[in-house]
Length: 249
Image 1 (cartoon, rainbow, N blue to C red):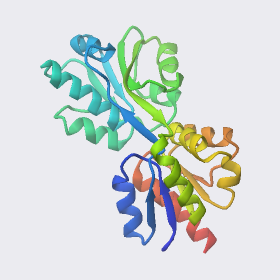
Image 2 (image 1 turned 60 degrees about the vertical axis):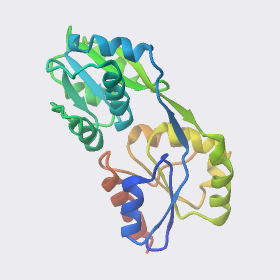
Image 3 (image 1 turned 90 degrees about the vertical axis):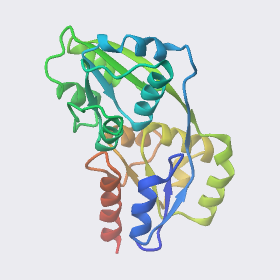
Image 4 (image 1 turned 90 degrees about the horizontal axis):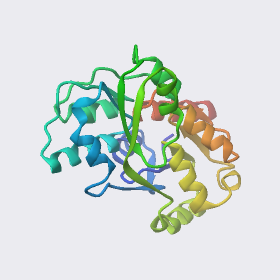
């Protein structure tokens, strides 16, 4: 995929951009979402004050991890020992570990039911789920179905398709893209908002999704993912993209 122009949709290209550059590709970093942190005195502050009352804290993104610990620091709260932490994906687990907190479980599944099924007995357990305000109900519903008492709290707000990205995306599409990476259903929604008809705009573009939920969002937008990453990691996304590139060589 040397010379390929690849859309990277996160607010910061980060590791994905580095991995693409190492392989001779050209990362085209255009945020399809933006993150707005929570203000003081909100629901996240309320649960942070009672965080030692939970049995599990499940975090699904590094953004959620940062939001939780930033509010705890602002409130002068030291992470207690009692709750066990589960982090979805190695990047999220690394963000928790960087705060000096042990990660008890790293579910391999990318679906709500799969994550809930990897946490052992949940009946009667109190579970804190800090996440994006617009996140789907798949995970809290799966946890509740297994008997957990779930507090799903908005830890940050995802802005879909920030207006500042409209013109850069239009220029990138007009210049031509070889591939587009989608890292969440929100990035798919951001693309649709900013670019219009994804079927037309992505007709000749390789599309790689981080997991089945993201692939389903892309399918609902009218585009079948070229590949779905085997794991929720930047490396797996690049491996999936390389598979397509080799098949087309």
